[in-house]
Length: 328
Image 1 (cartoon, rainbow, N blue to C red):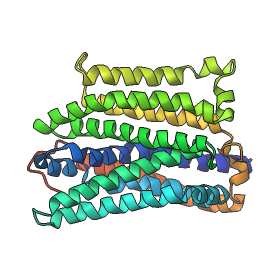
Image 2 (image 1 turned 30 degrees about the vertical axis):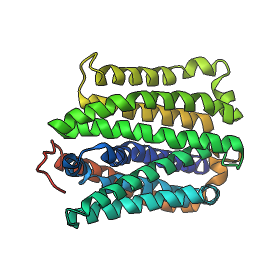
Image 3 (image 1 turned 45 degrees about the horizontal axis):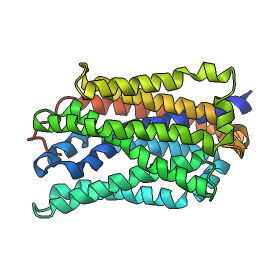
């Protein structure tokens, strides 16, 4: 029984950690990308809106990759070997963000523009690489032309989600002229997000016959309809709000985007289960020895609640609006 339960528990923890990363670090990557579009007088306020949180947000990807390494070492080796280049470039982007975040505070006024640009480049590079890795993973991590094209689509599509998350985060966190700019950015980002969702959704069953067979056979097709319908409903509701057709709170926009992320994650989990590498290796086959998982379980049972409590604590302490005078 433990041979079955522990690998699935660790797979669930890994999936939860990566989902939390996409939602939480997604918005601050989005703010970093939007930095290029903002006027200079708004950039300090935008950075201040994510300042207390971005380190905590990145903790989730460390947890997710750590679980992959410890609980599924065989899959870890294959995934990182196949995705070595985009993973390395993603880390370069995250390092550039960290450097720019610290240096722009201490830089002379004439040099701050350069560090703002470095922060934007690091954010965009990390977002695109994450999209590439997701697309390559879904399409089987081979070197085919189909894999390359699909990975390119997801590399462009994921930043559109991050831009919308960043815009909605700013709507929740700032007031005044920057709040109006955030509404404008949300309007601009809504259509590209929908286009990316449509293209990736249509292309996914074309690049993976395993996923196509799971989704487009009866009676599974009927049972799975709530997933795309809820996603489309949340997306359309966001559009109605950002274009002012109906009234809605910014927090609800952010939660609606989080719902789309959750539904996408559940759809992906259904598409690949019981595999951890589509068509190549199951969760059970990739799992470490049961005794190793039992030992590691104690660390996970401590780490996950601590990270959750720390995240809640940080967001509670630094809640509220960021004014133009706020610095970080």
